[in-house]
Amino acid sequence: MEGASGISHRTVEVNGIRMHVAEKGEGPSVLLLHGFPELWYSWRHQIAGLAARGYRAIAPDLRGYGDTDAPPDVASYSIFHIVGDLVALLDALALQHVFVVGHDWGALIAWNLCMFRPDRVKALVNLSVAFMPRNPAKKPVDYFRHLYGDDYYVCRFQEPGAIEAKFAQIETASIFRMFLPSRDPGPLLMPKEGWNVPEKIPLPSWLSEEDINFFASKFDKSGFTGPVNYYRCLNLNWELTAPWTGAQIKVPVKFIVGDLDLTYHYPGIQDYIHKGGFKQNVPLLQEVVVMEGVGHFINQEKAHEITDHIYEFIQKF
Image (cartoon, rainbow, N blue to C red; front, side, top):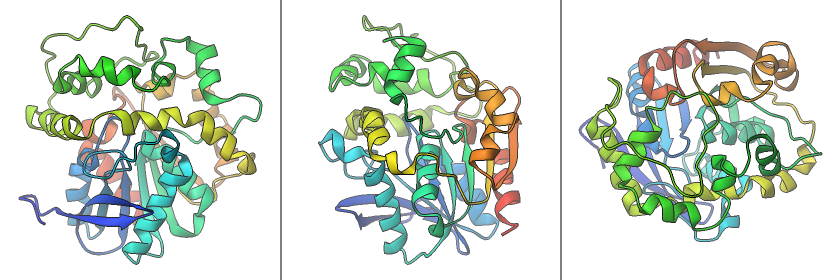
């Protein structure tokens, strides 16, 4: 099925689920992995831009999102399930290896894809989330709770059904109006008693009512449980990935982050990224780009610049 923008859509059987995939273009393949709370649609500008430059852009709705199946069991959202879906997708499309671009959770998934199956990745462009090595002394949710307390969104997401009940009290479009334009680099806190959603948040120039309504329509249908289950598997992933403690990322990498991104303001993260720690864990890290005045949803906010950054890097290989 092909939409007005020339983007074709299909459903692919992978790893026991049906995965919705958007794609456009011909040439070397670029796999685009979205974050939370997003969809293939977050890459709409990059899909068009990469296709125009002679690449085949492939953007799935990840497990639990949009038009892809959402298994009910929390443990079905482990990092092995999600990376397994992507390896199965590459196999179903008969792609031996691809360029990968990830943002937010998609970046975290991309790091793990590179760690488990570097043979399938030519090069990686990751946005927002730097590679963090597994800390054998501390589970991630416990670490975040220690750092920010129970109101931190990752901690608030842990109890099954609780955050979904909160989201259900708010118009879905308002949730996206609140999340996507956010430019607060401080920790994202969600008090248990709830939080105030401004009546009508003005949208930035890079986000339209049509965009908001597209996200809302899909989440109205598929819900938030699948996406939030990724966070509920953080400690499980920590246990499962023990064999990779100390493993390095061995593919060529370019990393891009906005200086107003909350991920760029974790304690110690800027020193880690810029003073050698990141490069030690990712020895083929070739470029780090910090975009001034840019928030978390960087691939939508600075769509054309991000497409240019991706192209400039992958055309070397």
